[in-house]
Amino acid sequence: MDNISIRIIQPILALILSPLLFGIINRTKAFFAGRKGQPLFQTYFDLWKLVHKGVVYSKTTGWIFRAGPIINLSAILLITLFIPLGHSKAVIFFDGDIFLVIYLFALIRFFTIIAALDTGSSFEGMGASREAQFSALTEPALFLALAAIACGTGKLSLSEILVSITSKFWLSHISIILFVAATLIIVLLTENARIPVDDPNTHLELTMIHEVMVLDSSGPDFAFIVFASALKLWVFTALFAGVLIPDIGFGFWPNLGICVLAVLCVSVVVGIIESCIARLKLLFVPHFIFIATVFAVLAMVFVLRK
View 1: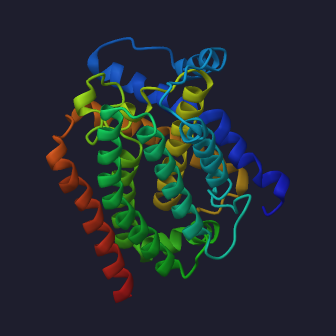
View 2: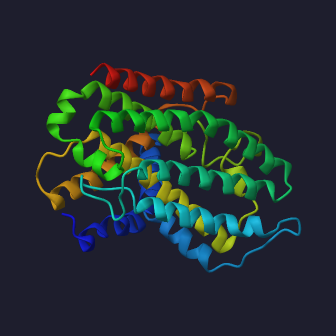
């Protein structure tokens, strides 16, 4: 299905369902802890409440702090247009769009960091330095993983890559698929500030990474940040599901339903991981990220041996 009216459904689903992923993760963690947990749609309620609140800006902040949430949300919205679901073409695709997506992620990280530094807060500066350190380790892993799958399929577009992952390709390149998927799940946990890298629910500034960078954000600005985080989680889970689950030839709508279900199941897996694994000490986080790089290198080695 190459009809643009059909392909536009993919980013619309991301806009509607991405906040649900946080609810699924929290309910999964509550189940493992023996609690009832917060409502499944709590993130939607929080976003609605935040957009109706006022915004408070510190006297030390400038235009960078105010523009950061808007730029980040705009960039992640643009990324969703390049992420295909159901092994179909995305809304926008062209050869080399894989590099644009990586640079857009870098743009989001850049403005998140400088917006945190613009507050003049030592705590937010500490979180920004940690974000910069860990992102410098995750970017090579993500790039190598995507490069491996691109070399395996012979395509340079995310849409073409995921469309090429058929059941036949999956069986003949199973080692590459598994190594790339292992890399993506570690990158997913790192980029979205999940356990064991970071705890999104912590309130101790000395151990926070992502949350400490947005302490001064409020009202609609914080709503933009939360929504952008939900979309970022959706993008990585959709990419992980698209790589791991092959196209079994059922057509667009069945494949789309399977992919959406897989995205929701990945969020359950993230909740299980956070329930069974403790947060790592900051000194051990680079070791954890390095494992993703090793998996990506192994995927590239298997590609070059084909």
